[in-house]
Length: 73
Image 1 (tube, rainbow, N blue to C red):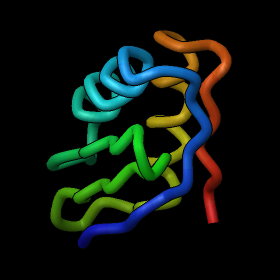
Image 2: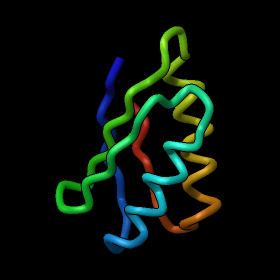
Image 3: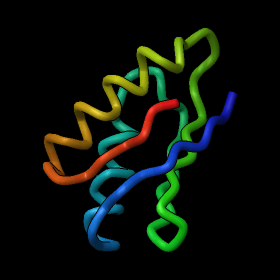
Image 4: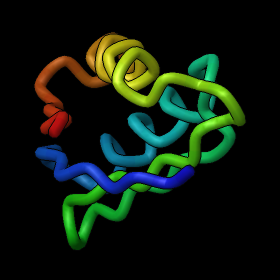
């Protein structure tokens, strides 16, 4: 399952850091951050709970880029 989330990030380098952090999160099969559209598309592993996984993704992204924001639906 894939879901797209609106994000707020200041630069392309920060967006790359967010993408890398998201990809390392358990339950995430793949993640792509598009700095130009300020969106993050996350593909979840089979059987993963998207809400729980995204909470962890947000925590991991805050570790690498403290002023980033992921708007969870």
